[in-house]
Image 1 (cartoon, rainbow, N blue to C red):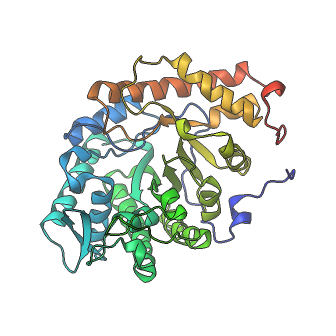
Image 2 (cartoon, rainbow, N blue to C red; image 1 turned 45 degrees about the vertical axis):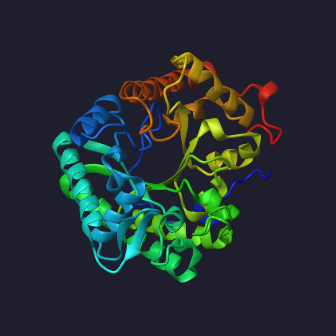
Length: 374
């Protein structure tokens, strides 16, 4: 392992300039991934700000229907920017020539979410996290007119990535207008990216698989969106809760933070994770169950696996506090009670990590990664 680990700018000279991006506090941070159960945006937003005051986020409430899902919110933003339009078909969202009822419904739901944010965050200032549909996941989840995924058409995929990059500034501007004190973080949601890279996205018939997207193309398209976020003055991070998240690809594309599900990580992910940390990339670690667990774990039970992984990577104790704690993934499938508890556990676990840095000043040599102590 070389002693010098390149920064994201050295890995990718086209990485975004973050001179205007907000600075995150270095310790004790917790936030959510995005989705929550329920259908009341004001109640959901109020709960987020109460439970996660250091880094609140704009919640998604997919229980309200297709227009409120990750894809639906992406369609709403694309429609607002005047680029692309889509309608709901039995197989999912499909691109169409002009806006229809489904798209207008998605835009209305987004507007209600932003109204709730403006009301709850009145007079508030500080970091605020938003979510934006990523270009590769969008290409896998949106359909062309004939029913095939946009991913099947190279030109259409490129145009979609360009359109999503433009929506990044639309989203940041909408939130800044409503919450002037917000220091905006934009989470690019890419849960389908591992499947896209592995050639696992099904064809319209379901009997075949679309060709995998090569790494250079994935870096280029994701990088477009991350640069657009930075140019709008936002802090770009990428979320992927699928197994084998391509952490190195995210860093090469220009992500300043990566959000991953700790429960899906294996030893094969250690090198990429360690190199990202060494390069100054913040880790948003999904360490709290996103579905109702039995039995319900306390903070001590959740803290142990995080400390064990950190020891295996070989980092010193003070770096523990740099981890941002989140639920493993979105909480839409959880009961309302567990969703509340999961956010509270995330906050308490982040504080416990901040305290643990003083109890673990040096890495445990017996658990250090064979890649060596950093």
